[in-house]
Amino acid sequence: MDKSLRELLIICEEDTKRFVNQGAANRLRAWRRHSADVDLVNFIQRIIRDRDNQANGFLIHSQHGMSLEAIVAIYHPELFHPEDIAISQRTLGIVR
Image (cartoon, rainbow, N blue to C red; front, side):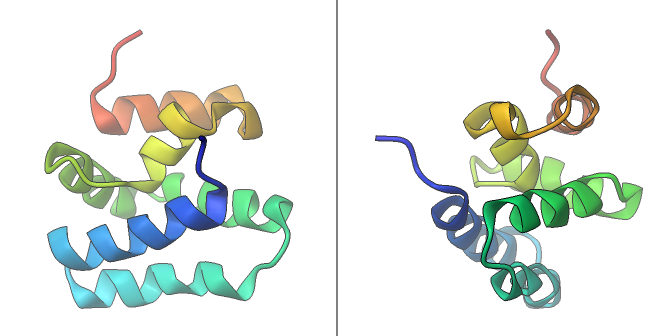
């Protein structure tokens, strides 16, 4: 069964703490203020488009963790714009 955005974000938050640091996980924790999926998608879009956060996505993914970019490019691409998917694929090093 596919995991929901919320389930994936919980895993992403835990993996961010494990593979990056507590501060980055605390900043990511702001997703919990959003209840609707559309708001979660907008939140994820803002973060993945910030170049300063892209290194975290690569680091988490390279350690086989759940990154925001993996949520976009692998788990729920149907929720995102092609530009978001392309950004995520580049960050993860996925060539298609």
